[in-house]
Image (cartoon, rainbow, N blue to C red; front, side, top):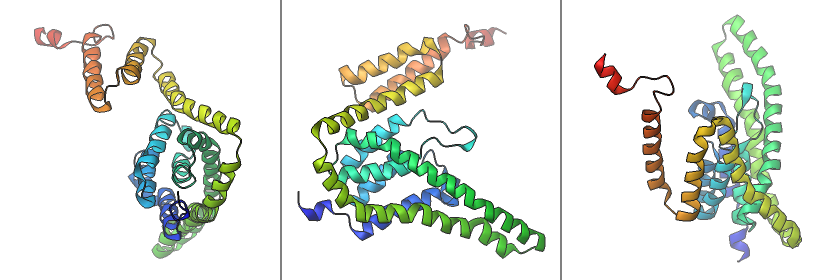
Length: 264
């Protein structure tokens, strides 16, 4: 592969950095972090910018499975999934990093993103007190600046700038680093990355917490893994099974069936 195709351009780095900034700005939270700014949409954006959607989406799909059971109690994020997806997808596309190894790197990258998030929350305390002072004097323009403009500029420095600069100047060096990584270490990262989606499934199952639902989970896994059924028909089949489960177990759960309602 030529150097032209593996080197990220300044415009591409800026576009990915702007996505990281928009995810962190107040407008991004309005639309929903868990939907628009989950790994799959972030991977799609990276794929569009870098002109390699298939590889980016394969990494994003693995990260989506890995993080599908993630929780943020009290707003405390254990991982910054969007930050991890943007960087891991870029490394997979431009540094020729194996997909499973890219998934394994998501954990330390996601933890780094959380630290930036904590720094942002610490800085935002300044804007809160500033907005309070403007509110006492009825300065609506000052409230707007302290509530939206200043925090957005801070997020641009914390998220957009590091991502853009890091990707533009660091992908080529990371590609050289990957080329000198021993095969045993790369194989270890690949194995660890391959286990991450299964870990995400395990977290979801633990959140469900019902042993009587485990057979459905195992059935779906076996159908995908061995019967090779496409995802869309399997999702429709799963919806039908879920409906039948609710209908036939409503009496056991203390519910009232439709037949009982008609006789009352």
